[in-house]
Length: 380
Image 1 (spheres, rainbow, N blue to C red):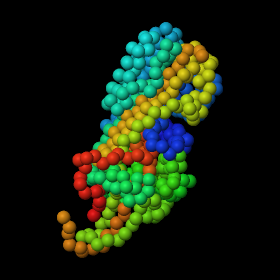
Image 2: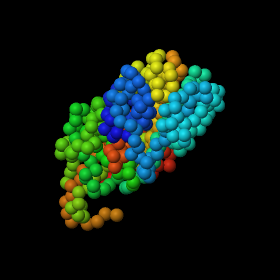
Image 3: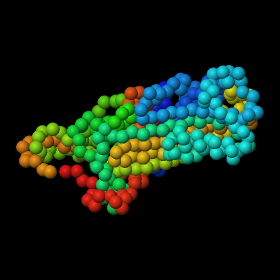
Image 4: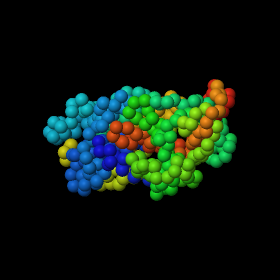
């Protein structure tokens, strides 16, 4: 799929978020919009092509961490065009029996199977008037190249002040993993947590009071940009010179683990997805069948960030209806510390292509578990 168009869709979607905890995937929506655009006509086609201008070629076919599956189920009595039957692979096509309970169970099974159980239900419901369901499933699982230390933490102030949280801390020497960038949302600290294979997660911390609608689009726009600010100008960053046993600079990171889940009704912002016309009565998709209109478009997503890695599952669906140890000190060392101790954003990025697979906002991190280490996460 087009990295630029998909990332632009994700940024536009994120720009309309409130400041609640959430996760979303433009990469899960784009293939369905591109598929609909191919078989659409008139204003519906124009709107879809403005959002998804290129075919949904997958950059993930050989990814060891990420899977993208597509499927389409049509009601038995829906007169599909020869073009649709010829061009859409048989392995991608399924059949709706007309029994909502039976069909719903089959679609739920597909969603669970293609997300390793992370999303157990199809986000749209099959009804007696459902003519077709198009769905994508995105699943991602990666370990960290350098794991975090897992121990509880307790911020002293701010929105999480006094809470005992699942803290994650890490000491390393790759200062290039942390960038400070100047954006329309103000300065951002962007920390790249490198995956062991082909997916990284970027943590994005803005100035206090900057919410998801500002930080996430700015972070997406800054992914390929060089650092424009000194690293210690980034939010949450402190730089010191300290005694050490050698002069290698070090990066200390203190953050939190999280699990974020969200359900989205895409038709609440139909124009963002090029679906404003397609929801009304009309012959919008003559390349599929006569007199089809979009009746539902929804996404369910979940993501977990922990000490050893990251995992996520996303299912997006569109349904249509018919018409209608300390050493001696011998040197001085530069120490850069990043504390992520208030709401922040995250992006899961396919490293080879730059495709943003998921974007999210964390306001309610995981609580410390009873078996967490007794001492708080603290880097020395």
